[in-house]
Length: 165
Image (tube, rainbow, N blue to C red; front, side, top):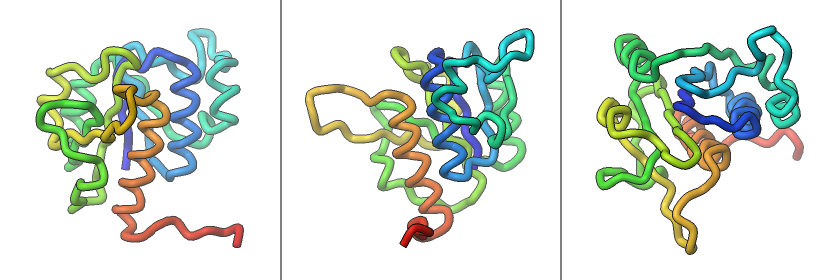
């Protein structure tokens, strides 16, 4: 499974997603649009991202993509199913998703604006995390973690074994 970050602007959120991607075994992150990379233009590590990722930016493969739509097109041509995380009229609860392939590309979006219609239109399915409280959404890093671990568990057909017990 791979993941695309569409215009996720916060270095802290990107760092959190790197750390979660490492823990969940995500193969690669595509950092699209304005999503910052782990290193600045001079090749120096971004301290805010590194503080949260705790080195996961060095263990998870990543690629900078200026266009999310082009990245999606490439992944689709490589046989990936595109799974967008967004509250939408045609979304289904994340836990109801039936997995029939191990080639999944998970997309999360901007902290405030989420994923735009043109990206959602390219998705094979849109999933959401049902909200039971007063708030309408979760932090993008938290939402990524919930969905990524659920999808990875579905792909391997069981929950993660614990090495601590």
